[in-house]
Length: 165
Image (tube, rainbow, N blue to C red):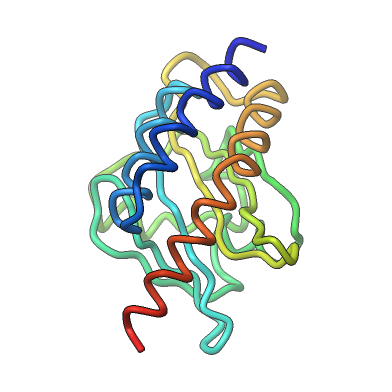
């Protein structure tokens, strides 16, 4: 219950952040703090191209992958959050990203981010829990967090799209 209270307090900061880049950075920092992880990536869905791409990714530049690729793609395709505590043994894991970045992924947790119409707008992925493996309590926390930040992320996306046009 303590983590849910912390998420509610975080929401006050997020509401004050209108710009997408700043919102994503705050979301990443808070997600890593809540679950005690090394890295966070937030993938957004481009339905026109069937691509997942990061607007925010710790320690590596932009990542763009097909919706059929990786643990994140599997999360999107199955519409199911994932806990992968042995990624190198998982057939969906993409070790090429570790090779490119020089990072070693030890474990992964992902969950979907939905908009107000219950369409998937993104996926949040956390890597390398500092103290052990991910568990069901981590999943509950991440799902709650994802639901909590979804409205702010949806508004930031709408605002960004209106600026581009």
